[in-house]
Length: 145
Picture 1 (cartoon, helix red, strand yellow):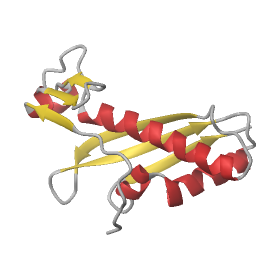
Picture 2 (tube, rainbow, N blue to C red; picture 1 turned 90 degrees about the vertical axis):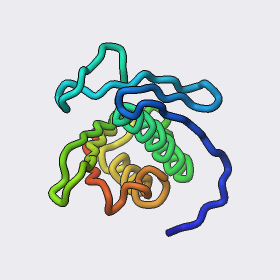
Picture 3 (spheres, one colour; picture 1 turned 60 degrees about the horizontal axis):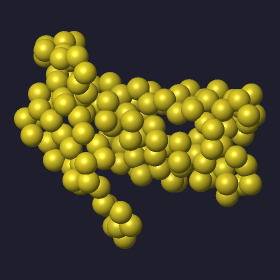
């Protein structure tokens, strides 16, 4: 396991698990939680799931990683649209697991250029990609010019 030199730490507390509430210590993120009907829960309107939160975080972080790589190559990927679709389901080995379908679109960059940026961001930069590697199936769809 790689050691890090922490630059920033975000802290959040959840109460009540998937049918409760979660909030960051600074109050910037607040979400009421509910198990979706598709998973046998109540699916309360106006609530989120941990998968919503993970998808939002991964999409934002990955977009930043793409732009970081692009800037190193004197390119601009700051307007890339990154959509992370996070799925949850039973694992073959028991318990539950996640999968991610990541869609990256930036028509201001050629398809091959964008694909190369996505690959480097995923393999070398994004901490979410590092955390999911060999643990979560992450598939990419890349749409450039």
